[in-house]
Length: 145
Image 1 (cartoon, rainbow, N blue to C red):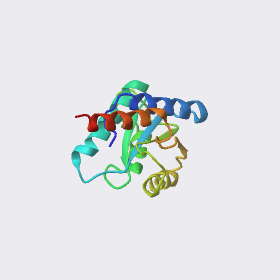
Image 2 (tube, rainbow, N blue to C red):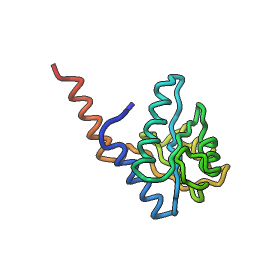
Image 3 (cartoon, rainbow, N blue to C red):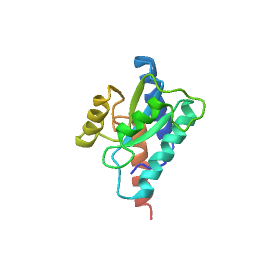
Image 4 (tube, rainbow, N blue to C red):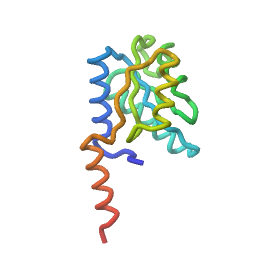
């Protein structure tokens, strides 16, 4: 797990800005796989909160294999219950990946969103230099004597 590595919020904020520019997204679901470990899921919720603060727009965590689901996140944003106070219901929702690469779970998240008419989505994160730098830093730290 990449966790709270510096640069990930910046990377997600850049992806959100692109979705805003291309599709007019005014809110986002941070799509994550989901885990049986409540701490891992709580961390994703924390990331979504940090991202919302950074963007000044609502962001909800939505899990593919856990609760709240991607659909739950979309419904909460549409109803205006984003936890962000003065935000009305979302008009255009974008999907932000908490995934390194495309695959079955990311596809399931996209399909769940598409059933509710949400199709604007950023690409998974692995193709970014920031992610490679984080992996290299972790490898170097793990191999230091």
